[in-house]
Image (tube, rainbow, N blue to C red; front, side):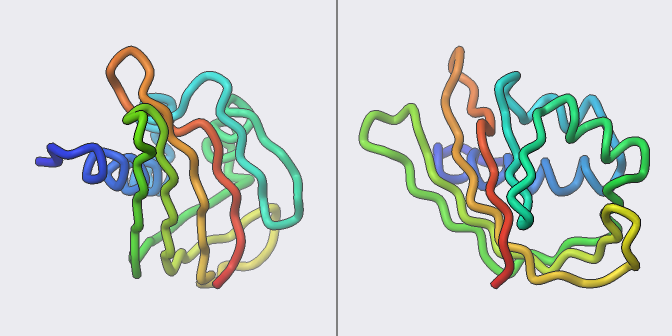
Length: 126
Protein backbone atom coordinates (compact mmCIF):
# COMPACT_ATOMS: atom_id res chain seq x y z
CA UNK A 1 0.00 0.00 0.00
CA UNK A 2 1.56 3.33 -1.05
CA UNK A 3 2.13 5.72 1.84
CA UNK A 4 4.59 8.43 0.77
CA UNK A 5 3.65 11.19 -1.68
CA UNK A 6 6.14 9.72 -4.15
CA UNK A 7 4.55 6.27 -3.87
CA UNK A 8 1.03 7.72 -4.14
CA UNK A 9 1.95 9.64 -7.30
CA UNK A 10 3.59 6.60 -8.89
CA UNK A 11 0.42 4.64 -8.11
CA UNK A 12 -1.67 7.30 -9.90
CA UNK A 13 0.26 6.54 -13.09
CA UNK A 14 -0.19 2.78 -12.65
CA UNK A 15 -3.90 3.26 -11.90
CA UNK A 16 -4.39 5.39 -15.02
CA UNK A 17 -2.69 2.77 -17.18
CA UNK A 18 -4.67 -0.09 -15.63
CA UNK A 19 -8.04 1.68 -15.87
CA UNK A 20 -7.32 2.67 -19.49
CA UNK A 21 -6.58 -0.97 -20.41
CA UNK A 22 -9.87 -2.04 -18.76
CA UNK A 23 -11.80 0.81 -20.43
CA UNK A 24 -12.95 1.71 -16.92
CA UNK A 25 -14.38 5.23 -17.20
CA UNK A 26 -14.95 5.50 -13.45
CA UNK A 27 -11.42 4.38 -12.67
CA UNK A 28 -9.91 6.82 -15.16
CA UNK A 29 -12.05 9.68 -13.86
CA UNK A 30 -10.96 8.94 -10.28
CA UNK A 31 -7.29 9.75 -10.99
CA UNK A 32 -7.78 12.75 -13.30
CA UNK A 33 -8.57 16.30 -12.21
CA UNK A 34 -11.57 17.86 -13.94
CA UNK A 35 -9.22 20.27 -15.76
CA UNK A 36 -6.87 17.44 -16.89
CA UNK A 37 -5.36 17.68 -20.36
CA UNK A 38 -3.50 15.03 -22.35
CA UNK A 39 -1.11 16.24 -25.04
CA UNK A 40 -0.56 13.43 -27.55
CA UNK A 41 2.69 12.89 -29.47
CA UNK A 42 1.06 14.70 -32.41
CA UNK A 43 0.43 17.78 -30.25
CA UNK A 44 -3.33 17.16 -30.12
CA UNK A 45 -4.84 18.11 -26.74
CA UNK A 46 -7.61 16.09 -25.13
CA UNK A 47 -9.66 17.05 -22.11
CA UNK A 48 -10.51 14.57 -19.37
CA UNK A 49 -13.93 13.94 -20.90
CA UNK A 50 -12.57 13.54 -24.44
CA UNK A 51 -9.86 11.12 -23.24
CA UNK A 52 -12.35 8.95 -21.36
CA UNK A 53 -14.71 8.90 -24.35
CA UNK A 54 -11.86 7.95 -26.73
CA UNK A 55 -10.81 5.07 -24.49
CA UNK A 56 -14.35 3.79 -24.01
CA UNK A 57 -15.42 4.11 -27.67
CA UNK A 58 -12.34 2.26 -28.98
CA UNK A 59 -10.54 5.23 -30.52
CA UNK A 60 -7.73 4.52 -28.02
CA UNK A 61 -7.17 0.83 -27.25
CA UNK A 62 -4.60 -0.19 -24.66
CA UNK A 63 -3.93 -3.92 -24.32
CA UNK A 64 -0.91 -4.25 -22.04
CA UNK A 65 1.60 -2.11 -20.20
CA UNK A 66 5.04 -3.04 -18.89
CA UNK A 67 6.59 -0.27 -16.80
CA UNK A 68 10.31 0.27 -17.27
CA UNK A 69 10.49 3.16 -14.81
CA UNK A 70 8.31 5.56 -12.87
CA UNK A 71 10.17 8.56 -11.47
CA UNK A 72 8.46 11.04 -9.16
CA UNK A 73 9.66 14.43 -7.94
CA UNK A 74 7.45 16.09 -5.33
CA UNK A 75 7.92 19.87 -5.13
CA UNK A 76 8.99 21.36 -1.78
CA UNK A 77 5.45 22.74 -1.27
CA UNK A 78 4.18 19.14 -1.04
CA UNK A 79 1.26 20.06 -3.31
CA UNK A 80 2.75 19.57 -6.80
CA UNK A 81 4.63 16.70 -8.39
CA UNK A 82 6.23 15.72 -11.66
CA UNK A 83 5.92 12.08 -12.73
CA UNK A 84 7.79 10.48 -15.62
CA UNK A 85 6.53 7.07 -16.61
CA UNK A 86 8.39 5.02 -19.19
CA UNK A 87 6.41 2.00 -20.27
CA UNK A 88 6.14 -0.41 -23.16
CA UNK A 89 2.49 -0.10 -24.15
CA UNK A 90 0.75 -2.42 -26.58
CA UNK A 91 -1.95 -0.32 -28.19
CA UNK A 92 -3.96 0.48 -31.31
CA UNK A 93 -4.89 4.15 -31.50
CA UNK A 94 -6.81 6.37 -33.91
CA UNK A 95 -7.53 3.50 -36.30
CA UNK A 96 -3.91 2.38 -36.60
CA UNK A 97 -2.67 -1.16 -36.18
CA UNK A 98 -1.75 -2.75 -32.90
CA UNK A 99 1.84 -2.00 -31.94
CA UNK A 100 4.06 -1.89 -28.86
CA UNK A 101 5.19 1.65 -28.16
CA UNK A 102 7.98 2.79 -25.86
CA UNK A 103 5.74 5.47 -24.37
CA UNK A 104 6.99 8.19 -22.07
CA UNK A 105 4.40 10.14 -20.13
CA UNK A 106 5.49 13.35 -18.43
CA UNK A 107 2.70 14.04 -15.97
CA UNK A 108 1.89 16.80 -13.54
CA UNK A 109 0.02 16.00 -10.36
CA UNK A 110 -1.50 18.25 -7.73
CA UNK A 111 -2.78 17.56 -4.26
CA UNK A 112 -6.38 18.75 -4.19
CA UNK A 113 -8.54 18.35 -1.11
CA UNK A 114 -5.79 16.14 0.38
CA UNK A 115 -5.76 13.72 -2.59
CA UNK A 116 -3.33 13.54 -5.50
CA UNK A 117 -4.80 13.96 -8.99
CA UNK A 118 -3.24 14.07 -12.44
CA UNK A 119 -3.64 17.47 -14.11
CA UNK A 120 -1.59 17.06 -17.28
CA UNK A 121 0.15 14.42 -19.33
CA UNK A 122 2.48 14.86 -22.29
CA UNK A 123 3.16 11.78 -24.37
CA UNK A 124 6.35 11.05 -26.30
CA UNK A 125 8.50 8.03 -27.10
CA UNK A 126 11.82 7.02 -25.59
